[in-house]
Image 1: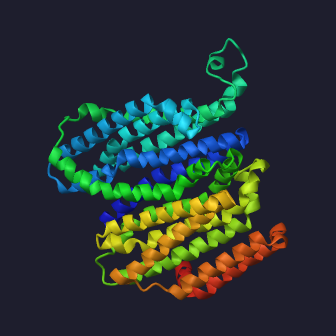
Image 2: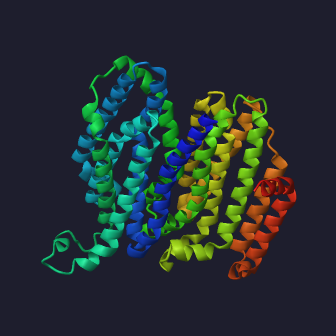
Length: 484
């Protein structure tokens, strides 16, 4: 029992440290929409997309390799020093090369050179923190890990509030210190400065790891770690392409920055499903592995997946029914609302990704994680191909279609392959019914003008769907109520 209690505690703490940054991003969206024109919001979104992509490249699977070999090798200090030195020198090389060619990068990407410079430093500082963070997790120090992670996002959030709201008000006195750090029309710059300061402070807190460590590099071990980590890098690149590369591709296809900004802002409303999916995944993955040796494990996985689909289907319908209220809260500038038509697709796409996460348990259980990389890369190819075809015809709506097609394909591929390698008795008819009814009611609520103008149909749809869930899952619901 103490083992499960410890597992639950660590999952809860790590989950908080992972979900909270996404929630902060969620909360910053209204602020950015309020203070930034759509063109500048587009610049922020494009640079953040590059950040995600290069974060994956700069860690090149070494974080996962560190965990693997930290548990396998007797000399754990050797693993720590080898991984740290590897990340350190590749990060320093990246720093010098990109700073040297930052003007060329700026001309090529059409992004302000100052934003490029800030981004380079953020990437390097975050990369240098990778192994120290991993070491905290390996040493089972979840509280220290969570405090530093939460401190990072908290500082970033407060600095954004200071620079974008407070500073313009208190910098009016030309003799004050605040006047010297205030620049007009520098809102985008302040967003990156906030991220940079947060990353710098985080690195400084973790920097003792570099001074206490014995700088010994084991070439033989490094080659094994690199070999193990490269498939993780490939899968990570695939995920980054599926999740964020659409903003970059829209810019490459010369879609107006105004449209990219509107699309990126409205895209954030899909974060409701992302938060649900992330919180669920962090809690359920350890449970999946703990059940893997049980005789009834496949039935357990099937049941959990069904209830994930039920919960996700209800969230999908709820968010879309009340989408015109949510847009006022999360995208408070009406000039951005021309991109609202993509939101149902983005929410559904993230739901498909959550279902894929459930279905992917089979290749993790049988140690075939390379299959996950293949599926992820296939999804990335679909994303790139459809964006290439659809953006010239449909602009950012084509990107939304590409996202849902990629995640839907990944979901079906995982199900098809899993039933061959590790059959799980999913209740396909029930799952399909919940999903289909939710999608149909959501589509009617959003796309039929008369239904969208009044909440009568939406509330009726939610009530009807809730009753349908109760009728089909009555025994379990009553059992849970009796326990309480």
